[in-house]
Each structure stands twice: as C-alpha cells, then as structure tokens.
Image 1: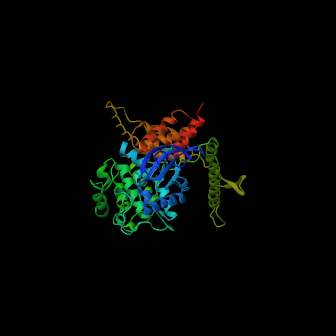
Image 2: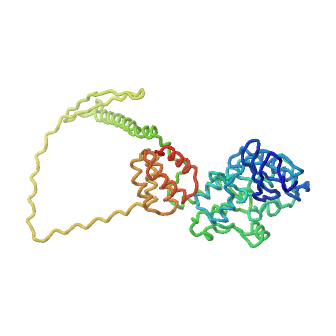
Image 3: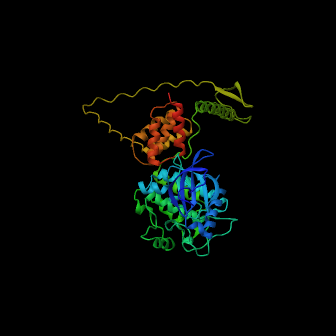
Length: 479
C-alpha cells in the first residue's frame, strides 16, 4: 500500500486521524455518496500475518451484523485494497469517552448515566445476536453530533457461528477493563462485557479505574485477585449506595453479576436517585400540547360529576335504611320520600331520593351567663405558635411533580419555582429545573424555559428528554 494512496480511489482526500488496534483510521470523502466517512485499514506489518488478517476480517463481519443495532456504529462497506483489508464506517466527529475523561475527569452523574445507558443498549443488542465485544473501554465509545454514545471496534469480538480466531490462553482486550476470566485467558461471554461496563461506570463517576495500577500486568492481576474498591472512598461526594452496585457489577464470578447491561445501569440510576431524595423525570410527563392540557383540565369536572352521582346513590341507600321496614316502631317525626330527578350517565340510571322530616320545635334559648367582673390584671398574651419549617427543595419538587402528573400545572408552578430558587446545585435542582421548564411550556409560557433546560443539563448531563423539550421550545417559541 503506497503512503500516498492508502484507500481505494472512491475515497478522496484521506486524512489519518487515529490508529485503532491493528488498523489505521482515515477520514475521507466518499466520492460516490458524497459524505464524510471513516475508513479503518489494516496497517503494516499486520497485513502479512494471516492470523491478524482473519481477526480484522472477523471485526468487519461482527460489526456489519450489528450495523442496525441501537447506539452501534454503522458499517457502510468492507473490502481490500492493495493487499490491505479495510472497513468503511460512519464518521463521528465528537471524539471518544476516553477524550472526555482525559480532559475533564469524572463526569456529572446524569451525563454518565446517559452514556452508560446508550452503551448498554448497544452491548445488550450485540449479546442478543451472539456477539461479545471483549474490548469495552472509553476509546471504543464514540460520540455523535448529539453527544450520544456509539459503540465501535468489535475487532476482538467473538461471534456465534464464526470460526474462533484465538488460541486457548490468549488474552485479548485492554488490561484496565479486563474481566477476571478474561485476564486468566478463559472463555468469555456477555458477563465479561458487563464487567467492563461496570469498570467504565466506576471511571466515569470517580475519574479513575477501580483497579488502576502502575503497570498493565499489575492491573490485570488486580482484576483477578483484588476486592472491588469503594467508589465513595475515591469520590466522597457520591452516595454510599453505589458501593453495593459496584460490588455486584465487579463480582469475580460471572454468574454473580447483573443479568444485563441495562440492569447494571438501572441499579446505578436507582442508587443515585435514591440518595438524591428527589423525583427524576426519566420519561417526560404526558404530552403538554394545548389539547392535552385542555383534556386534563376537564377531567376533574367528569370525576366531580361521577362523585356527585355516587354520593346521591349513597344518600339514597341511607335514606332507605332510615325509612326501615314494616316492623320498625313508629317514630315521633313524620317522614316523606320524594323522587326528585333521574340522571343517566353512560347507561347507568341514578335516582336521587330526598327524605324529609317534619321540623322539631326550636328549643328555648338558654340565658347567657353573666360576664365575670372586671379585673385590673392584664390578660396574659398568648404564646406565638411555632412557625412550620419550610419544605425542602426535594419535597417541593416531589409535590410539584405529582401535580404535573395530575395535569395541575398551575398548582405545580409555584412549588417548582421555589425548589429551583433554592439553588441546591445537585440532582434535585436538575430535576426541578426540568420539571419547571416542562410546566411553563404546558401553560403556554416560553420565558426562561431554555435557561432552565441548560441548567438541568449542566448538572445532570445530556438527556433525551431535555433535548426533545429544547427542540420543541425553540420551534414553538421562535417568535
């Protein structure tokens, strides 16, 4: 392969952007489809090694099988040029999670959870098709234009139905993210990818890997022998509930780990949210279109009518029980029964029965007691009642969210405004800011919505709900 022409003529203006495993990655322009692509080419001297060529081809086949899976990089073409196999895939300009961790360290919990959930979706989809990635690490998790994770580089993947390309005892993967069974050179499976995802989660939340050592060999040995460390010890601001999640996610025995990548992420999310003590909108409340709000506004009237009819039925039953049967003793007060009105609601007839009684004579009013004689001693001043403590921002957000779910946005508005005004700077403020933004849009307001969404995203990271509400706000509030 000549240095000046590393790619087939179809791919113009190649620019080397990275070296990935056994390959060199170029950014180029697809002259036929007129789009920017990434092309991974098996580099010298690996192209002369039959075993490595098979592994590279295996990567292409495994990745192509998963091209339509969620959060997985798309493969456009597989071929060979001047004796060098290549893979053409979509070009993602956002860099990798390795870049973000290197530049920023630990990530906000909300952002970390969003990335982990996206990686989990890709890995679970791969496992469902019999593909194990075997090299889950930040460098293989790329970011698209929307900041969403796409899993790349199935170069060391093992796929059901494809010939094995590794000898027994061969260790493939990166030392910092190796599952214990992988470090021992044993057979790996989906649980190995789940272990690596737990390592990644630990790193995203604390800024360091759980078994970080001075050498790759020492780190691989720690995965096999060392107990799972405490995340809270490395990042005291994290809730202690996370340690139990990591203890299971980093279990030495594959059978003791979570049953899916999604289960691991759900456990992390639950631990973070339980510690925050607030309500997170993992999915937005019902659509806030004007029609939906109008429908919700009418619901109390419908239920009020049903409640009134139910009370009428209860009143009828009580009236009939008071009337009694033939054996009832005579009463001193005459009674009468009147059918006042018949109302039909969805085929059910409700009869309102009114029971009247003759009025009893009013009793003679008792004489008022004489007022006490005046005294010169002043009356003691009543002690002031203690003021009730103000509700916490978390409680205000929870109450406001409950009202949102019931469609009572006007009642939710002041509660959420108080929760946001407290400026707690934690997940509670993030959730309250989103809930307040959603509530204002539900009421047809635009003021401050984008700022609230920006604040929520700043604290908890990128969320699909935030992006969706931002797009709708920018569209509807453009005026």
